[in-house]
Image 1 (tube, one colour):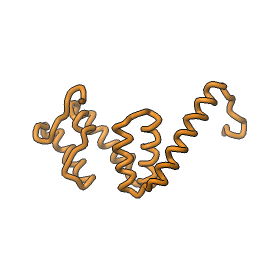
Image 2: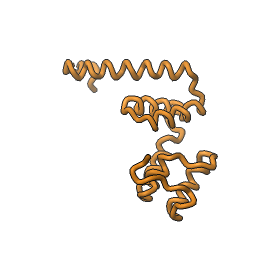
Image 3: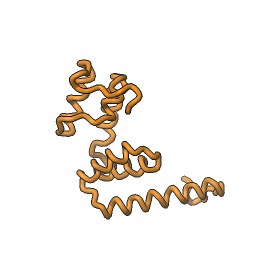
Image 4: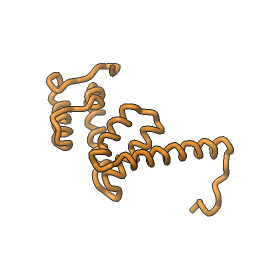
Length: 131
């Protein structure tokens, strides 16, 4: 359970409902995820976070599936079960296959393993890697 509970649409202020409406329109859904309901206790944070996510996750130099895969990878590394579930579902909707997920987890695991070794060994960065 969220620390402050969840703000359902019917109980939301007009300011929060406006953000909820935009989320539902953008995502072509009639429901709001618990993440948004939890942070709606601070309408300014809700609005800012939604605006930032809309902008950052929109198509750009990286396609939407690649962005979702990165989000899953970071969520696994940060150990956020909610974000893993949410962005795995979103990546699947954007075309992620089971094989892609398995390979992604292999890359995440290897990156975390070697990152920790580099940190532990305090490996100096090679000159050719510096600009």
